[in-house]
Length: 364
Figure 1 (cartoon, one colour):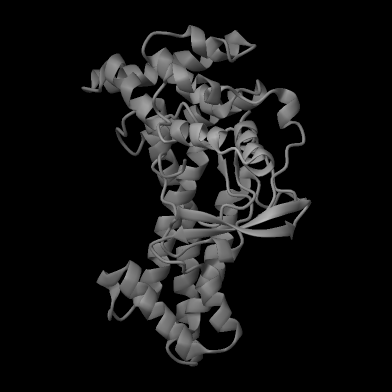
Figure 2 (cartoon, rainbow, N blue to C red; figure 1 turned 180 degrees about the horizontal axis):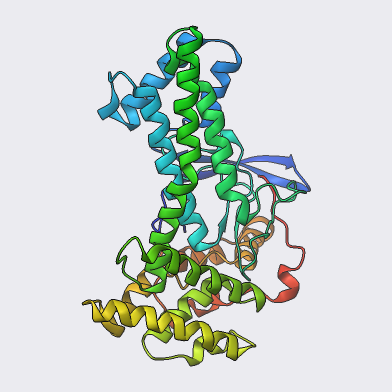
């Protein structure tokens, strides 16, 4: 699903049953997932060697990482600082993409953040349905550390941990002045991350709204427009995926599907008038017009996500009935998340309220 949505991700090559019973929350059939990736290097990989005090191996790891993921930096004087900057840039883009489809990773520890900028370790992950920044599904995340709205902050925290591992390499000596210079450089990268993330998020949100990036002066206005749209979704418990998708219908002149999602039509009207005014400014400056805008929005706003109740149905059928047909049907639909097809309509329907209430996901 993530690959079909255009989000950088590791891929599942194969799943092999082991024949063993594994005790998790309940006894479950054991299996091994074989995963492929640009590399399996994570922030935690760097932490491992720093914790052991093996600085020469840490240097080897860093230089191998640069050669694999950022070869243009190989051999340059400030390559370890530049590596930190490159990872920050990749993660800013990745987390922004997560946020724009309502994906909640669920366990964003440092061992689950890749240097490559790919999504990895699909454990207690799930997609948000009704919009709420505090949404959390993981059974072990009692405090909401990895809730949907916290993901950008956790990414920054993880990058700070990566920066700590690179400081000895950046300083290149134990001279106090060199260490302080390295700390200042690394801190500047970490402090710049919120800006990188905000810019990446807004680029994606403009695509979702069908807007063009006109000038920097539009940033604040467009950010406020998005924030108020999300506040509207939150206040009326609107499905995140369908809210955005039906906005594309409104762009094409069909407002009825969008209005069906909202209880308070007056609040929606107020926001829609602001959005149309912003779209009109784009059009006056040679923008795409209504037809192309709607098409662009449909390419940015998926119709299908892996709805939690459909995932559970596929898992249950495979596990209890040895029936992979529900999985195969779900997989076929998720390979085409932007195409509205009648035979896939079942997978676009939000879960019943009772199915979402207290819904939990698990590692494993």
